[in-house]
Structure formats: C-alpha cells, structure tokens
Image (cartoon, rainbow, N blue to C red; front, side):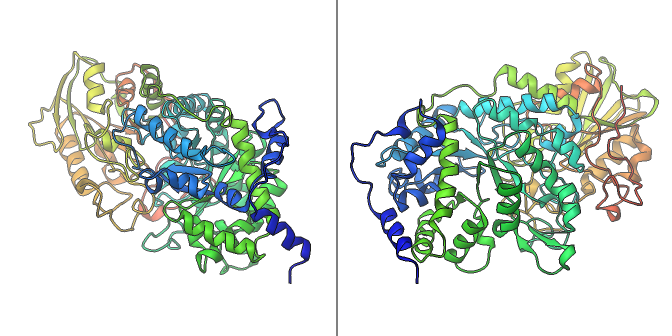
Length: 620
C-alpha cells in the first residue's frame, strides 16, 4: 500500500489547474529560468506533464493538428523523408507554426519543440546545402570548419522554423561494416572529441544540439545486430575501462566542455566483460549509464530523448517499456506513431506507483528548462528564410576540398593540367544522389538527380573549361591512350540497417541502391577501373563512399587514388583539389584495410598493418 501522502500528491497532480490570482511567473521573461520552471511545473496536471515527455511524428498529427492540443504534446519531429508539400522553407514554417498554434491552444500554452535529423546540412529540405557527412569532416581535421558547417546548418534549420537537431553523431566508429560508419568523425575518440565544435555551431546559433548515440553504437560487435542487421543496434562487448576510453569520452567532453543540452541513447546494448559476457543491457534501459554516469557523475542538466521507438527494444509490454525507460533516466520519448498509447501506458504506471512523481517532475523540469532557455515561450513562431545560399554553398565547397584524402600520387599525376584531355568514367562521376549519400531527402537517401548542386563531373567542367572532357559512365566510349583517366566509383546511398555489410538489401529503395553492401567495389565499378586504367597512360581513381573500399589488388594500375567520402551537393570542391586550386590536406579519419579479413582494424591495434594508416594523407 502506498503512503497516504503519496496518494494525495497523485490525486492533486491529476486535478485540473485551479484558477487563482497567483502571478503567472513562468510567462515573464524577466524571471530567472529555474523559477519559471518551478512555477509552471506547479500548475501542470499529470496529463500536461506526460504530454511534455511525448514526441510524435509529423505524419501522425499534420492532418489533424488538434491532436497536438489533445495529447498535450511536448514535441513533434520529422523523420527522414517526412516533409511538407511543397518541400520549401515556407511550407516547413507553415507546418511548424500550425502545430505550434495547436500547442498554444492548451490551457498552459506550452510551446512544442520541433526536431529533425539535419546530420549533414538540412538534408530533408529540397534546395538546402548538403555538406559532407561527418566522416569527411573528420578527414579535414579542422574543428573551426566543422563549427562553421554546423552553424550554416543551424541557420538553414531556423529558416524552416526548426530549433532542434538530432545531431551531431559523436560515436566512435570501430568497424567499417557498420552502416552508420559515415555518421562518425572517425575511429579515434580524440579526433571525435576535437570535432565537438559541431555542438557549438548549432547551440551558438539558436538550435538545440543532440549528441548521439549514447554510448557505444560505433563499437558494437559484428554478428550481434538486431534482426537481419549483422551489426546495427548490436552489442558493445567491452570492459568498463575501454568503454570509458573509447566510447564514452566524446560525451564527457560534450557535457562538461560544450554544455550540450540534449542526449539521445543508442539502440545498442552494452555487455561488460568485467562481469562476464552474456548479460547485455540495452542503452534505453541502462540506469547506470543514463542516470548514474550522465546525470550523476557528469552533471548533465539537459534532457534525454529516446531514439525512434527506442524503448520498444526493451522487453515486455509498452507499459513495461515506458516504466523501464523513465526509471532508467529517459526524459522525452520519440513515439512517432504511438504517442497516445505511450501516454496512456505511462499514466497507468504513475497511477500504480511504479513510476514515482519525482521522476516525472525531474523529466519535465529538464524539458521546460531547455524550452525557456531557447526563448520558445517568447518567440514560439517562425518566419521563412532562405536555404542553399551562395555563402553556404561556398562553405560546402570548401568543406569538400578539405575532406579529400590523397592516398597515392605516382609521378605527380595530380594536380591535373587545366587544359588536359580528360576521360571521365564511373557511375559516381555524375550522380549527385550517390555523392550525397544517406539522410538526403529520404532516410536511405536517393540515387540520381535528386537535389540541386554540382556533381564531380560538373565541377571538372567548371574548374577546367579549357580541358577536353569526355564522359562515359560505363567507359563504353572510345579511350585515347593520351587521355588522363578520372574514374569515380564507390557506393550508392544507404543509412543504418540496410547499410550493414552482409545485411539485407533495401527492397523499396531505388534500383541502383538494391545491391549488397560490401567493403569492396561492385563488379561493374571494378570493371570500369580496369578498363580505363589499362587504356590510359595516367589514371586517377576517386572513391565516393561512406567508408573505405578495399582496392589493394587494383592499386598497381592506379596512378593517383583519392578518398572522396560523401561530399554532398558541392562536387566542385573535388575538382578544386584535382586541378590544384586548393591543396590536398585531408588525412584518413579511419584506417584503410588491406583486405576485408583485416576488418575491424583501428589505430592502436597490435598487430597493425593497414594499406593506409589512420592519419595518412599526401599533400600537393
């Protein structure tokens, strides 16, 4: 039996807010934030509080915005590919403002916080500047540039009315077979920590940053993945000491040095070898790491947002999952299509005494604190701005050039002469969707002419107008021995799950993406490399990919080899370094393996004998 005072407190929490003459301090911007939080918290019913802890997807409420009012939602998100029609800044702002008006129709008029995955620019929005994915930014070794990229991302997000970014990913990628490897800045926690200026770029420009996925998702063991995915959402099998050194380190810095205010737990689990392997604990229910370490030892005073249906990875019913997630320390729950069911389940758990009101009040206080800090109560509505500005595209081009890593350059093949005869081949030479990668317009990305921008072929033609350029994607056009071959090959877009090597293909993706993911070039790519490099005197190969592609057996016929990563919308940056307008300065953020059998391979391993070591990169 619960004590009488606990029952009384619960009944009081369920009652409507009484009408009194008490000054409404929370609406006064002159009042300190903590006083505003406590004033508002004291006026909220349990329904108000649980609503603030709930996030629904745009598609679940856009057709009927009154659901935001009815459910008392604290947040709405757009998942990858969830966009208004038309997909313009004005339509985005109209969507956000419409949902905001519904939130402000609640008795306490608490604004919603709208979130989106803008992981390499505001990629959901047509016409936005699409920057290199984090793996390329890690190759730049330039924290200042990273801050500028994320600042520009923040500006384009605000132009569409959105104030919350589910980025940056500060995972440390330790296995190239993982389909999210390109979301990481690299394999070394020290490098990832240096790139936390991404948080500053967002936060200093009015957008809430989210570091994810806490913690260990880049370090999961191949073969432990969920469902058909060999490694995604798997288990990090490690000692506490190694976990702290590799997986936790960037989050420590994000909280203690960069003041991040939102953290997203990982789909993955942790299995401490110190305790004997065989007892993995999913991060969404890991009280030791969420509450004990993050909120306790590190003093994190922001809030935790679950990943997409993240608590559904916990055992039991939705009520069991909600109870476990809240009690572990999660504050807001991304329940894209099950928001009312989640609210009902959590309400029942509180009423049954299985989730204490102190935990609910702590969660809601954290959420409200951030909303007050962002100024949402004073300025809940947005006005449309511009995306894809000339300044941002110029910055994107600079970031692309800085991310290129020169791995081989025999006989000074690069830079190319501006008046050279150039034979361009390969499926990624003139495919802006492939060079943008996943999380571009759609969750898994799109191949083909999907976004405005400049392909690598476009860039070559623009940078070297005096050059004689022949383009043949499959190298079927005649090749002259005196041509300089530029072969652009690599991967097609993917995101987590379907990006796992050895995992299932994405059957609903465009046909070119329906290919098994691999750490080696596809047969057609290999054939184009062989054909062009055997036919010309000098041959340059560019690999457009989210991770290394093993090319050891073809390296002898290649004169110059470039890791171009996933450059995004500004392919002119690749041409800038090919023709010497900018020098090659990039360095490998991950080790480049000699063979598939070497994977996983990371700096510090013993033995360590990759084809190209971590940090390698030639200069021109």
